[in-house]
Amino acid sequence: MITIKKFTFNPFQENTYLLFDETNECVVIDPGCYGPEEKAHLVDFIKENGLKPVKLLNTHCHIDHIQGNYIISKEFNLKLEANKLETPVLKQSPTWGLQYGIKGDLSPEIEVFLDEGDQVKFGNSILDVIFVPGHSPGHIAFISHENKFIINGDVLFKGSFGRYDLPGGNIYTLSKSIQEKLFSLPDEYLVYAGHMGETTIGEEKSSNPILQYPKEGPTNS
Image 1: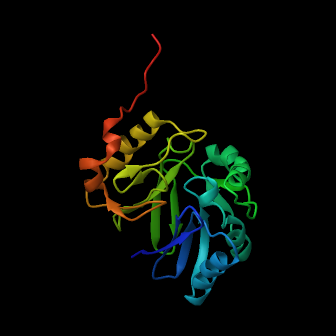
Image 2: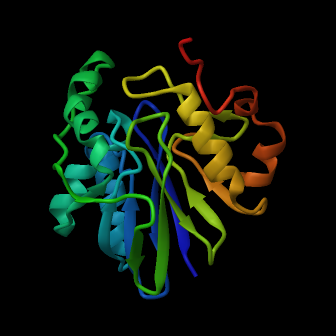
Image 3: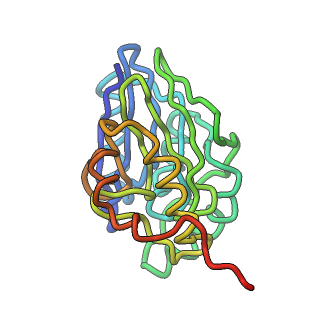
């Protein structure tokens, strides 16, 4: 049984997720902790609860999701795992961060590339990886079919969906990712997003505004 601990960090109110099971092995997903107090809060929680981080994962590499990559990587000797297409996004994130007045630790490079069909294993638990671009070119999400949830970063939100006006974003690609990948999951699956609160697949399938957008863009005739 996976336990999910959510932290909300940085000026963007980004959700960082710590997943652990009965073995106390855990994975850290999208550590957005910014500044010494937030970083200490995350590291202290891990240590005080006797958890053993074995994976550092990014759904994507926008600046608000990577601020804690360095401290988690260094403190627990972990390699960063993400999709290969996020490499240029990761490299550009410090520049984008300065536009918002954010200057933090440089993230380590992606050393383990994850893609559709891969599995992330920790303790007695397994997360399946799916490829869901549109908000970012190499965006991935992590599904626990046993526990019936998905950690989906900035793809699908409660009553909303991720931005598509950032470099590498595309509304049609995002709509296709959501409607073909996420909405194919059972209705009862919980959705844990990179911002705001939780929702369910069933709730969003019935009313999310992404349904207004086609899954293919206009073509030139």
